[in-house]
Length: 320
Image 1: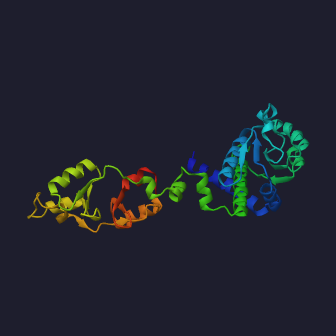
Image 2: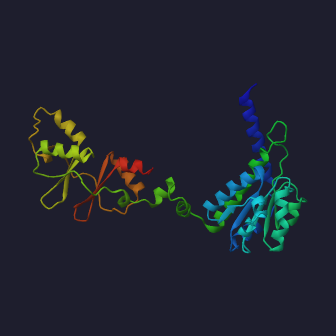
Image 3: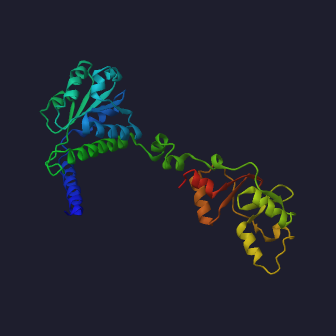
C-alpha cells in the first residue's frame, strides 16, 4: 500500500473541490458582508458534529480579525443558552445536509426574534437554507474519504469558506497589522508591534566602572554583573567605552598585556548606544544584529547611562 499516493490523492481531491467552489461562488457575497458589517451585535456560529468543530474555528478566526464572534452549540441553545443570542446579533448556521436535528430545532426561535440567519449547507432546498437570509453553498462532488462518506472535502471547503468570509470582512473594515496585533498582544506580531526597549531595559545593578579603574577590578565587576561586559563612564557620568569579554580575550593575546592597566586602555571606545528608549524592541534587535553586538547601551540625550538591553533579553521576550 503506497501511503504517499494516498496522501497525494486526498490533497488533490480536496484541492479540486476548493477550486470548483472558487469558480462558482454562487452566494451574494456583498449582501453577506454588509449584513455582518451593519450589525450592531455579534456574529454567532452554530453547528453540530464536524460542522460544529469547523464552526468553532471560524468563530475564532472572525474574532481575531475584527468581527465580534463566538460559537454556540445548538443543543445548549435549546437548554437555556438561546438567551445568549441578542436582538442585534446574526447567526451563521452550519450543517452540510441542512437538516441537522439539533440545529433545525432552534430555527423557529431565531425567526420569531427576527434574527438574521446565514446558512452554510449543500442543499438550497434544505430546512436550514429555507430559513436563511443568505445561503452559502458548500456542496462537494466527492469526499476525500475512500467511502465518500466521512466529512473531509466538505469540512475543508466549509473552513475555507469561513476564511474567505473573514478576509472579506477584514478588507471591508480596512483591518491592518496593528489591529491584528491588538487582538494578539502575546503573539509574536503583538510583541513586534507593541513591546518597546524600555519594557525590557535593565536599569538596576549594572556593571559600571570609571575610566580610572584597573582592569583587575573591572574583571570582578564584569563577573558580578553577569552581562559579559563592563560599562565605562567618565567623570561626568557619560558612557565612553565598553569592555566586553571579547575585548578581554583579545587583550590577553597581547605580549604587553598587564592586568594592572586601566580598563579604558583595552576597552572599545564609543560603543554603539541608543538614545530612544521608546524604540520598538524589534527595531532594537535589528540594531543588535546589524552591529553584531550582544549588549545595546541606552543613554539619555547627554550620553548618561539609562540602562542596557542584552540580546538574551530580546530572545527570552520572544522578539523576532
